[in-house]
Length: 409
Image (cartoon, one colour):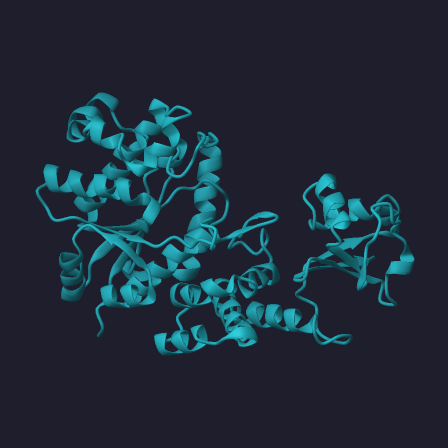
């Protein structure tokens, strides 16, 4: 069997590794226990998490044992990585509820049966720590001078890094230490923005236990402008179908930048690399074929084949005209009374095509909105029954690729 390190490297996952040759050797020797942490900052995983979930799936398929660590404790502190401001403080109840949702979602992708994977929550050991004992046993191994040079703290230094957040690296490092003691976990994986935190855990284990420990980080999905992928007009791209519909999820990947298609095919699908290379080399308008494959394959993994088929059919229906299946398209149902209380801008806000009325006005003034195939020319245009077809349906379009169906009950 091919070494999973080579698989991850070939598919474009690996960004940095603490001990590349040793990690490859360990992964080639037999089942290895590794972990990835998920701070429960929301009630659903996002597209950003999906990349690390894919890596976890590759690792498990190669015979290694994943530990999915829910951050019931660390989330109460908040990771300062990549943030210019302090994260929103969540209550214990909010964190516990979010962690429960994460557990349900992760179980769709990772096989936790018969000890093939482990689910842990760091609240179980962090919340009852004796602070003085923790400082004496863990804090003594960390240099403040070195910590302040870490990337995870740099962005916070100008506006002020709180002592609360400064503890985060120690807590995440302690997680790795606990999992090593409890399960023999010797490898931590994570996004490349976690490099400093991962190094902290590796060095803690090596110093305190004198045992091998390794860290491996993955590339971050970014646009050509360097911004993280997975953001939409409505916010994050969620894996929960109630927060981001399978259709919207499909459409996001169908519309990625041409330059990112090959990278996403390698990272976010299980297609053989020969097929990834073939699709990546398509040129001009043919790249749309690669985007359709990308969108379908990702949606199939996240939402299942049935929802992927529906999303694909709904997307194609936009170009096939009347009679096509648009059942998977995002839709809003209104009564005639509700419709009478709305102007065109209010309808955009109601359907989520605009976050605010001011955004709705801007979209219309820039010629970016159509109703029933006709460009909306005025922000004062009334919304009437005449806009709806014989099936009491109105198709709204924002830009070239975002559609929403309004139906009258």
